[in-house]
Image 1 (cartoon, rainbow, N blue to C red):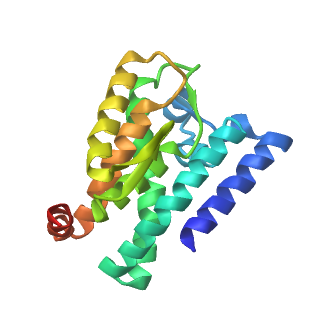
Image 2: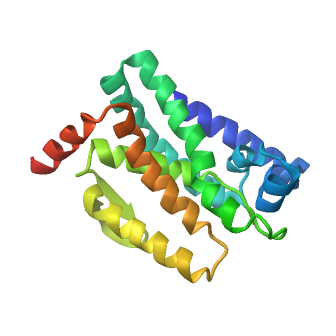
Length: 202
C-alpha cells in the first residue's frame, strides 16, 4: 500500500510539472541548496522526472521491489513499525543519495538533478538484503541475475560511470542510495544480516 501511495504521489507531481510547470522550483540544484538554503530541494527533486521514460522506469522498479521490502519490513519489525521504517527509508534515501553531489557541486549553479532513482536504488538493495537470490532482469538479457551477483556489479557500474562523468545520469546518487538501502535495515536490526547469510546458504 505504501509503495502504491509513493508511486501515485510521484506520478501526480511529475505529471503536473510536465504539463503545468514547476519543474525548476522542485529540481535539485546544489548551488541553490547550499548557498540559498533551499533545503527542500534535497527531497522535492525525487518527485519530478525528466520525461515519461524516466518516470515509468523508476515507478515500475519501485512497484516490483517496494512490495518485497514492505512485506519483509512488516515481518521483521511488525506491521505498524514496518510501515513507518519503510517510509523513513524511502524519504531519507532521497536526501542521503544526493548528499555527495551537494558537496561536490555546491558551487556549480548549472548542476541539476531530478528523479527518484536514488531512493528506488535504496529500495532495490533493501529487497536484495532480504532476498539475495531473487532474480533481477537487466535490459536485453532474458535470464534473471541473482540479487547477490547483481548488487556488486551494479555498484561497480555506478562507481565507474560516476567517475567518468560522461553522461547526464546521477550515478553517484544511484550508488549511495543502493548502499544506504542495504545498510538501513541492518542499522535498525543487525540480526537481519544473519538472515541474509542464511538465505545465501540455501
